[in-house]
Length: 98
Figure 1 (cartoon, rainbow, N blue to C red):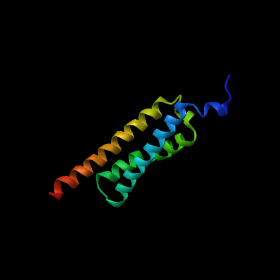
Figure 2: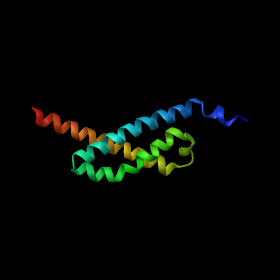
Figure 3: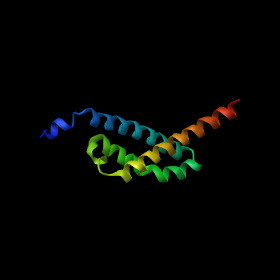
Figure 4: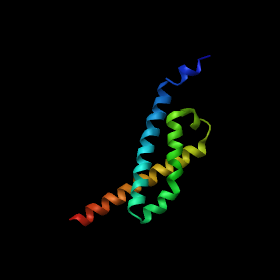
């Protein structure tokens, strides 16, 4: 049986922590976008705001995601929504800048 401290150093836990940091950064940028630019992004921010806290939980406690398939599904949907928001915003800026 492995010690708990050895489990925290496995490659899987570092991968979960890396994805959690990346997700927290992406979600926080969409939160910023929804706050400074009130539009459809504000509605999306209301849906994905709890995901920031879940991603931060995954940074410090990667085993949180192990048995929670619903949480993992929610976080994936939030990441897709956040990426779609930024894609829409960047496309909008590119289209109207020419």
